[in-house]
Image 1: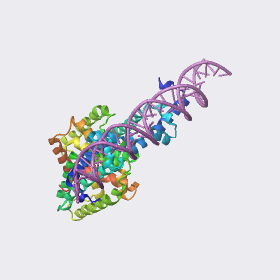
Image 2: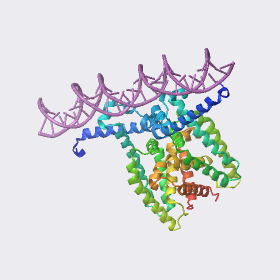
Image 3: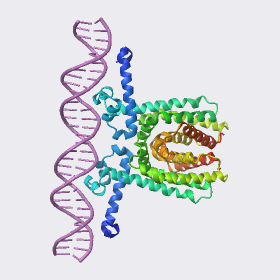
Image 4: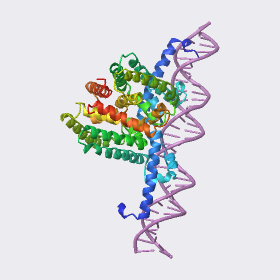
Length: 209
Length: 209
DNA sequence: TCGTTTCCTGACCATATGGTCAGATATCAG
DNA sequence: CTGATATCTGACCATATGGTCAGGAAACGA
């Protein structure tokens, strides 16, 4: 029951295997969607027998839930950059940087989340209604404070947040489309340009530049 | 072979049935993804026997391809508003209005497209490489012209287009999430506010307001 | 009316999938 | 070393799915 009781050797193995499964699952779920993904394929990618997956995750949905939760945690952490900031230029700028970096490093997680929401959030409805809602309310209030203090143009805070999510996640979710139009995957320089473009547009849009 | 030869009664029936199938398919594909959608469910939604679907569309992929193509056509039409415009305020403003309206009226089509692209565009790769690429090149040139004429701030035209797509389609693709955060589906007033917010932010962002 | 073509459909099939389970294997505490 | 526990896996199963097909019904031209 208690994981701290579990011996070192086994615990290490367990974490390693679980991590491999999650990584494989994230990739497969992102590329095929929940319905299109198969436990067999995830097992193959992870290099494990299918039955072993069911030892770690009872059902496909359990595994999926874990993958979605992971990306959500990552996003929540990225938001902390926004809180300590003295104003919108630093706060929103840092948030954009962080979100863009996540789109670059975790494109599959972003896709899984997008897919889940698009399908009506059947397994993460509670996250939306609790954690995300609270988070949104708090940041909207922060933005409103900046507006009241005359640090930025009077924009609707919620819609600004939607725009931040939309623009940054677009580079993950629609990465394939962008790559095709770009004539190949984005280079380091391309990513810097993308980041600068998004930041420049939005900061100018809120009148903070 | 030639459809104009087909008698009126049959032609009318055929179009009606085909339309019903496409409408049902769009809904089901959007809600379940390509892999998760079943011909049986599409048939049920359309109110037809499953075998009948296969009379109109040989395979699931054929039907899917049709649905994706339909939304793509709609988007292409929306772009025409941009061309005749004398400058960015009218052109981009009209484009945002049109895209937002499509997000509102055809959220399912937008989701199907997003899902397709996220999965690596297995069936519409050619659209991306031909039609969409040409379209993008043309509009980027138009935007660059506006920049050169001093009608707007010097922004990267491609990234501006990505931002336009991201922000407008977000209201369709993530409509569920937005509805939850909004405490219910967007009302007419909410949509007007969303439209105004997106337009205001972006037009200010490109220095055209 | 009549033969022809198009349209429709229930029943069926091969296959793939999520999940199970008994038994083998490895690791552990004592 | 030994018994107990956790981990692993090949073989298996019930079910669901995309797709087929033979034959019936409806619409058509003449």
